[in-house]
Amino acid sequence: MALLVQKYGGTSVGTIERIEAVAEKVCSFRKEGHDVVVVVSAMSGETNRLIALANEIMEEPVPRELDVLVSTGEQVTISLLSMALQKRGCEARSYTGSQVRILTDNRHTKARIRQIDEQSMRKDLDAGRVVVVAGFQGVDEHGNITTLGRGGSDTTAVALAAALKADECQIYTDVDGVYTTDPRVVDSARRLERVTFEEMMEMASLGSKVLQIRAVEFAGKYNVPLRVLSSFKEGEGTLITFEEEIAMEQPVVSGIAFNRDEAKVTISGVPDTPGSALSILKPVSDANIDVDMIVQNVGEDNRTAFTFTVHRNDFNRAKGVLQRVADEIGAHGVSGDTKIAKVSIVGVGMRSHAGVATKMFEALSAEGINIQMISTSEIKISVVIDEKYLELAVRALHSAFELDKPGVEETL
Ligand code: ASP
Ligand code: MG
Image 1 (spheres, helix red, strand yellow):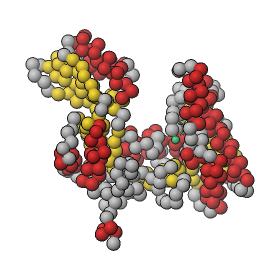
Image 2: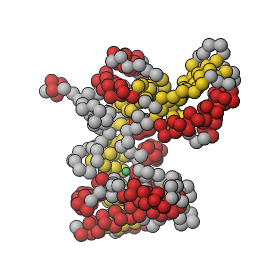
Image 3: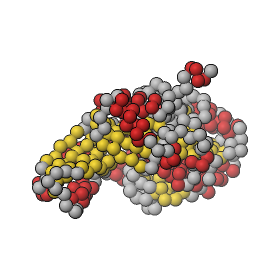
Image 4: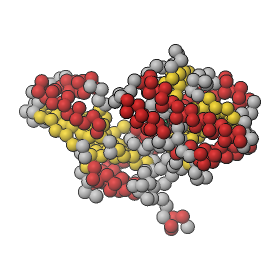
């Protein structure tokens, strides 16, 4: 018999009917003899609704009070789910983050978990009860309510699973697993049975929004087997695990991720002297703007150009900062483009295979797609292209790396 931590997201508890369905599911695991800790999110849309209320009072709500407000969403779902469980004769108790002592730092709205006291949960489990815990929230050392950032219930679930040394942390959501790419873009996208923590981290950071990235990081660090599966459809979902546990026949590329959230800025005619990168990028980082890809071109006349990408929301600010820098250091000009997209191929198999980049460039060139920037890591190659070719690029790469579903002949 296993100890399972199961997390049900906002859509899975979005209505009373769905909460009852979750209760049925949890009861059936109890009947099979498993110990279950359930983590829930707020009903879908609720966290946004609460934030909007706060915004009616002030544009930038006081973080401490915002945490008190948004944490109520999860308090509603834990109690309703516990009632639904008890109605079915399944003993259960609900707890807020502070009641199970999910101790965090005091950074309101983006707190990090420091420690969890799993003793009280153990007592309930030993007494045969399901423990229902509010996701997304914790408490600081002074008893203030904190929250873990949007999508933080995933992190709560993984942290509880780590603290309890659970056999598996199961994230129930509205998709039935992690796919080779977004099935809305490529019909033939396949569900992956297994994926490594590293690959999942890359895919999550590149915009495959199945799991909160911190949850994946946490699971990898504490060795928590993590499974993503659907609350609406039967199936095995996708297991996120270690590389050694993945079959030898690992494909070179496991998935194609993409991201439309970035914009690119260029500062040209920069005097090519030691410290020029610093003089450009330091003011950007001082302005709290995250930089993703960076390219420096070799220029003529001892001048060079820097291009880098930032989140689209930071585009105007980044351009403003660069304009000031350009004036100071005597660069020629600043330009930018928001209509770009980043497409990445991800796979641990790349480590042991040559020619992966060539194959990627071939596939894009065959479609007449121009590559504007390139960056690579050990298990990922990313390119920036014109946004209007994004879907074409993803489809071309998906088939070039043979990620499409097996055709009819192959399955016969
Ligand atoms: N309810 C929170 C949010 O909407 C936490 C979560 O759903 O994981 O971000
Ligand atoms: Mg969520």
